[in-house]
Length: 436
Image (cartoon, rainbow, N blue to C red; front, side):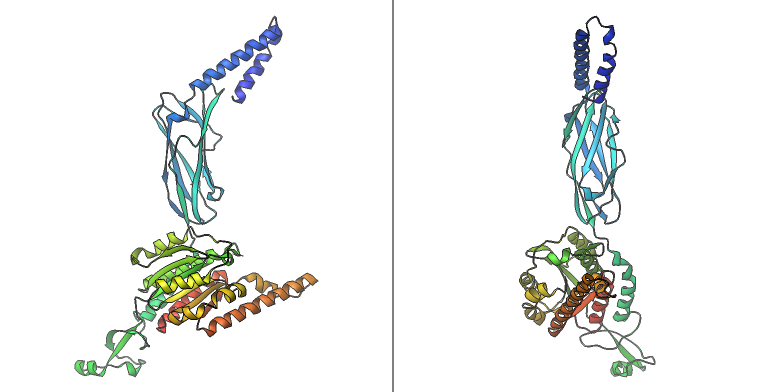
C-alpha cells in the first residue's frame, strides 16, 4: 500500500461521529479501503508484462560522459504508471534524466526511453546492476514491484584511460621525423638502414659522399640513412602492490598506463612492433603487435580493466614470460617502482638473464612526497624523523638505480606528469642511436 491508502482511511475517520456505532464505522471504512487497495493492485500492470532493453555508449574515456538509454516497453492492455530505478555501480556516476521518484506513464503497447548519463570516476568495466520497477494502480493506493524484472540484458560500460599525455604526441612525432630524415638529414649511424641519395650541401659529412654515384651523375651525391624499422618494443606493466600506491590523485598504475599509451602511439608511427604484458603473481593481460593500424585502440582496451593487486610481484614470472615470448632482441620497458625491497629481492636476481638478451628500460614514477619530506626546516621532532625517513628512501632509490645501471639498464625516474614525455624522449634517443 501507499500513503494514499492511509490518507483515505484518516479522512474516513473524520466521519466517525456521524456513525451510530463508531466500531462498526471503523470496520466498514477499513474494509472499504482494503477492497479499494486490492482492486487498485489488480489493476496495476504486472512487471512480467514489461520488456526492457538498453542502448547507447559502450565505451567512454575517464573524465568523459556517456549516455545509456533504457527502453521500457508495455505489452499489456493497460496504461503503466510506475517508478523506475536503474541502478549502476557507484563508480559509474549514474545520473538519470528521469529521477527514480518520478512516476512515468507508458500507454499500452508503447515504449518509453529513459536516458541515464554516466560520468565514471574510475577506470575499468562499470556494469549495470538491478532494474527496479514499481507499478501503481490507477488510484495509486497500491503497487506491484519487482527487482531484476522485467529481465534486462546485461550492459557494461568500459571506462578507458584518460591518455592525457596525448598532447605530447605532435612534438614527439616531429622529433621522430627528424630522426627518420624526412625533415633534416642525419649522418650514418651504426645499425641504420640506407634510405636515399641526394645532392651534397654545405655542412654534410663528407664520409657520407657516394663517390660512385657522384661519378655517374656528374654531381656530388651523399647517402642518407634512417633508423631501422620493424624493431620490437615490449611494454611490461607491474600490477603488484607498488602499483596501487597513489601518486597525486591516481594510482601509480594509471600513470604507467598513460606513459605506455604515448610510447605505443609513438612506436607505431615509427614502424616498430609493440607487445604488451601485465603481470604480478599471474599474467593479467597480454597482447601482440599484429594489426598495426588498430594497435593503439587494442592496447587501450587491453589496459582499461587492469587494476592493482595487493600482492608481491613475481619478477621471475615476468622474466620467464618475456624470454619465452620474445625470441628476437627487443626493447623491454618495465613500468614499476624503484623500491629497494621489491626490485632488490625480485628483479635484480633475474635481471642478468633478461639484460643479456634484451635492451631493458625501467620506467618509474617518482613520488613527490619523498622530496617534500626532505625539504624545509623541521619544526617538530616528528618532522625531523619524517625528513630522515625521506632521505633514507631516496638513498635506497639511488642504490637501486646504481645497481640497475651496472647491468646496462636505462632508468627513467620522473614525477607523474613528466614520466610519459621523458620515456618517449628515451625511446627516441635509443632509436636515433640504433640501440633498439
